[in-house]
Length: 181
Image (cartoon, rainbow, N blue to C red; front, side, top):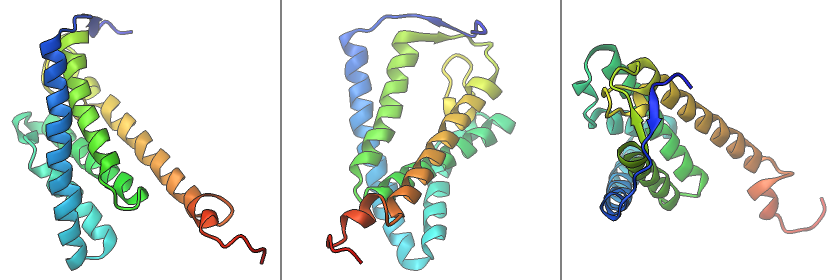
């Protein structure tokens, strides 16, 4: 709407194959390490909330957020932390299964690659605070739009988690014996 991006609309087999490789490789590898192994180890040493938060922060810290520098780098660090929290909440909501987190993480990475390199051209002068740092090759997790999307995802997850835990709906009701109290 503001002219900061234009439709490119050019997909090719090599671009799609690269996006698929990113989807599978990054999604699987990072989720296995961070939401699988690391979170499990931290949960043995720390209370549940602390383990969840620390794995999200460590996930964010190992990514190259510092290359952006200044406020953009800190915004990207915050966005990566929010993503780590959202992926952990998804795994928790799915009873410990990593598949949903692998799909979401891989889909975001591979999907954004395909969108940014084949479908959408973001101008180099687009404000980093809005679209994320990177000047034309942006990482949306460090911009307002990415933060809003991740915040909405966390809110939806929290609402779904609370609803599933209520006795009248969701998993708690499904596990009852069927007898009326």
